[in-house]
Length: 271
Image 1 (tube, rainbow, N blue to C red):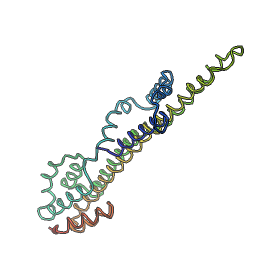
Image 2: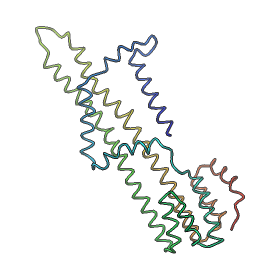
Image 3: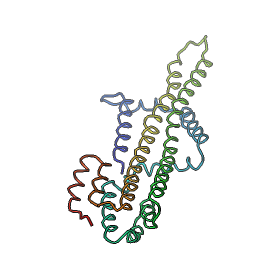
């Protein structure tokens, strides 16, 4: 579970509510109703959703629940787990040959990892193996960026429609002004006009922006995992020593992870 996202979102909401309710004790939560306006919700949320829908294919838009599921879940595989698996595969390949990896491929839950193993089991050209896998990664990343772009678009249009709502409110306020009755309602009408700008900023910076950023982080994590697999598989196909393979793959992770994996894998044989 993506705890950081949930904590950040809840904390931002709590701080904002307390700020709206006077900022410091004693809180006046009745003031929260000052920030509720139905027409503003319709203009900002309704128009933002409509424009985002018009800007992307329907299949991307209806995948929003899937995007949140991906963002909230932790990655299925960690780099250190993949490195250990690749080292084990290298030891099997050196001892029993590449054909012995077919059984291990069938045990893989990750389709990409399974495909990578089968490509070398089927004795494909090394350049073709790398090109096929890297093309798969590139296409996957393009799909992920398209999903993140949806939230970038929403983050851009929601403040714009907040400003549109403000302009609508100001126009209505000016139209209602009666020179004979004075301007007693200007403060109230101005407050309602500005609420749409508030809604637009909240949507852009508390909802859509963090989602886009988290989706790109998930993409980077998945690309890293797949690049480790590509490098490991091509080295296994080339018959590289498992110990040297581990050292090479450790360059993909941070220093602390390297030290942990190096200690944990120092006993791995050369096959």
